[in-house]
Length: 254
Ligand SMILES: O=C(O)[C@H](O)COP(=O)(O)O
Image (cartoon, rainbow, N blue to C red; front, top):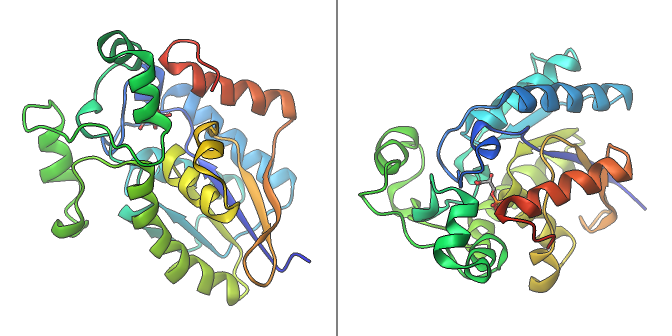
């Protein structure tokens, strides 16, 4: 029987999603479409009568603005919002700023798919020569401890820094009876989903989370899913949005 419920949402489309660039820890803003997606996410949650006690988000504005837009739609701008680097997108290393289709031309579809969706293989570490090194390393993320600051992250490494937040912050708040929403990123949320649903490495490779469509988990007393990844959107829309993410590198649907 379900004892706990939590809502998660990937941010609305970012300007870098729109330009098809690997983004990772670069702090891209929402695109016009992303702003609309975030507002629609808020409306969907409002229509389903959701109310929250606490919101959790990353340090990146695309997730923060999605979170605020949802809370505004619910008339809940006053609830506490926890910001943490642990919910950031996975660090895309030296792919940051690279066009996804150009990366395929340069490195081949198979290699890029491994970097995007494999469990254990990280993209190449970010180089100082990367145009976005300075802004990511020196400016944006002072609050991430030096010793934990990544130069690139596989999904496995992303999960390693996301899970302590799930276990130490999210789970205790759920136990207190709090209603929670997490507004985060494609890969930080894939990590949580993999953990909750105990997915194999192969299963998680096939999962592309759509932007701006909230999904619900209902959990039993042991925090095992009774209901998994129930999207607040019709099936065809969700499927099309997932395929759009998969196709960013040029048509592959998986
Ligand atoms: O960081 C990014 O580029 C995206 O938000 C996620 O990218 P992916 O779908 O290629 O992993």
